[in-house]
Length: 356
Image: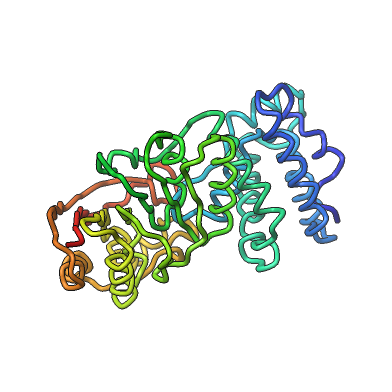
């Protein structure tokens, strides 16, 4: 049975939106997805089809952002929830007669939306479908360009002043949108790198919207960095904990080779993910984590912070600044259920190293 029915194609929730560009991509995306997947011809399949199309009928334009977060960037945006207030408002506006309580309907909507994301994520064909990636990444770009609603820390605070040569941000991820937005047009070239097509397409689209000409987007799979690019500064922000130690050594060797003399390597990182994985060995703790989040984490050595500063020095960098702090927090940022706090203790570090 089709994924999208005539009731879903009403897309009433998109009416009177201030972003027709985003709304257009919602309808194109689900029309295209309708050609790829559907519901089974069973009683449960028919029931799910009805509720899924009720969700589509009442969907808000930003549902594309929520879906993209779940499929492509859950590691950076672990806590993603449907905007039920917006959905309820649209259902009320359409005078939809509901046969179940709103709490029951919310649960069904949430399950179906998560299953949709999982279906795409678990299918190599759908996950890598260029058209779907483009629609979701452009939606992300348009939303951030129009709202400037950046949920990340300001990465410009890390950028040294007085740079004369290009700066490269390693595995930039979603923070690249904020960097593009804040990057002054009279600064040296900013090179943003990533290897995820969703990020590359989104950042490329955002650069075009910004009209800035001193920003370059490169598809790079570190630790294999590009040797043809000379840099005055390399920024590695919460990236190196994704690499095993041998890979980190390879990255550091690349960095010292491509940096100009007196060039700067800036590293900000934590062992947060290692600590979450360690605590997740406790079954109760593990069960509280957001579904699928644990699988996005990389297991590294226990003394990551110590070995990292050792390896930076060993490759030949002169460390001009090294600072670390231990943090302890109670947060639901990584919990499946809002308000269900998890205790987390981790180390954060800052390194500034110069090529001499």
